[in-house]
Image 1 (tube, rainbow, N blue to C red):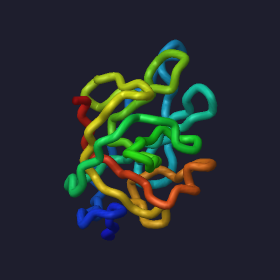
Image 2 (image 1 turned 60 degrees about the horizontal axis):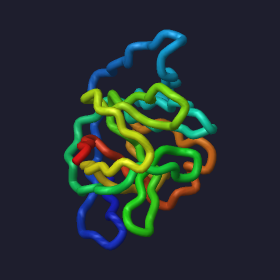
Image 3 (image 1 turned 30 degrees about the vertical axis):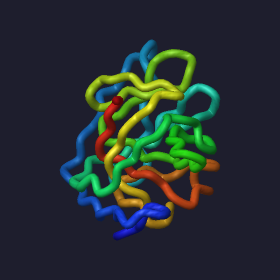
Image 4 (image 1 turned 45 degrees about the vertical axis):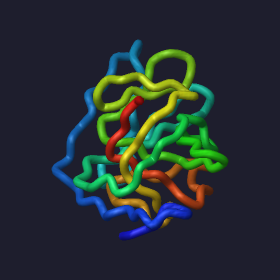
Length: 157
């Protein structure tokens, strides 16, 4: 599968499924637990305010595009704003929901990221119909997006 980022020659490379991993469950006082979505190991976390966090199942892929942006709510999902454009994001395996009242996320390396935070992601962009098998099913208005950012790495500058 190959899809171009709007206005860029970069491409998204197909992702292959690795052996399934499971995220550790949290106690009732911790962050929300993700619900499995589909056979690829993707998860959807329900955050405060009816916002969803989409997390990919295990993948083996290359970061073909740089995805710098500001973490934002896009439709009903946590995504990124890049200039005047907003994209729903499928976050890397191991990303979880943050604790507290505001929608936020915890990256696989344990770094907490709040709405409005700047990130530098690696991955690519694709149409919702062309999401890799490891991506969760898109809920609600998240499925209305023309392009989805699928990240396999995220750094906070």
